[in-house]
Amino acid sequence: MEIYRIDAPADAVHFLKRLGCDRGGASIMAKKMGTMLFAVRGLSCAAANILKQDAISVGADLALPKGAVGCDRERYDAVLMGTRRQMEALIEKEKLQPLGLKGLAEALVRFMRIPRKSVRIMGVINANDDSFYPASRFRESAAVSAIWKLVQEGADIIDVGAVSSRPGSEPVPPDEELLRLVPIVDAIKREGLFSRVKFSIDSYTPEVVAYALENGFSIVNDITGMRNEAIGVLAKEHGAQLVIMHMQGTPETMQENPTYEHVLLEVDRFFEERIDAALALGLDERELILDVGIGFGKRLEHNLMLLKNLEHFTRFGCELMIGASRKSMIDRISPAPVEKRLPGTLAIHLEAIRRGASMIRCHDVAEHRQALLVYEAIERGEIL
Image (cartoon, rainbow, N blue to C red; front, side, top):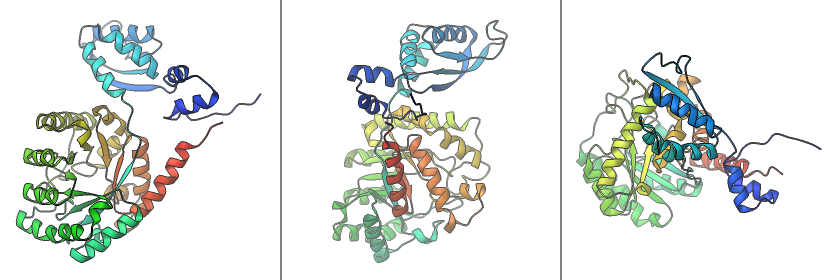
């Protein structure tokens, strides 16, 4: 007899089938693999004790502070833990409980969604002179050549923007933004590039977004998170996907002392509000892409908290996009000029994929394509 340790892969059912388990048995056992952890804040004393007993009764558990049994204070934070199968059993119990526990059960249902597996790479083209990474700046004919290069390197999507959103950047009038963008959009159309790859418009200006969508673009990348609902209306009218990004402040002010009480929960509330607004316009969850906005009104510790807990946002059932390509957070961890931040970029993006991201916005498509192929090969690696 021999023994070796294996990872608990996301595609556990596949490996259980290789053992010869029947379909039903494989599905049941897969739910027993791996422990799920949830932080629960603000439980009343009574709710905390009910949840503790219910969790234990299904084989899960709830970690509470000392004194919770005797109700030494009004509210408690806790950590709920258990396997997927135990959580499913607990959800059924809490649906029948008072004191807000029914709402907790409904929230847990959303967290139980299985994240999407396929990953798309979005290459970046900046049609301006002031984006933070000079190698991403192109105008007209140079932009078209750069787009062809990204296509050949394996981009699934190409994001074209004519206004920098780097910290401290100033707004650009719509007519100037259009002046920069129109020749590139027209050239993409002439070159037949829409049949090769999808295009995203990186703009929050309705006139610009409308022109791009009318001429073949199929994704809107709105860094303001649809503060102007006209952007959502345009996406709906043209059947386009919409990226909703979180940003505290504006590009001009966002890095002037960004502050959060709890960045994870505040970004979560923002997405909840903006998704509701998008659904009210007739958009579908499948048409929405969420971006936590790395570096947009956030300190290093905020960025790290969001990346570490990215899987939290899969609860919304939308695609998750991450864009940390060559950003200053890498320099703050390991000092390096923007030209030398590719290794840090790849580390962030691969971890983001592992934690639920299904779209990566980057400057270096060929390198990301290779890294993604290797990552996926490891994930598919056989264990028997």
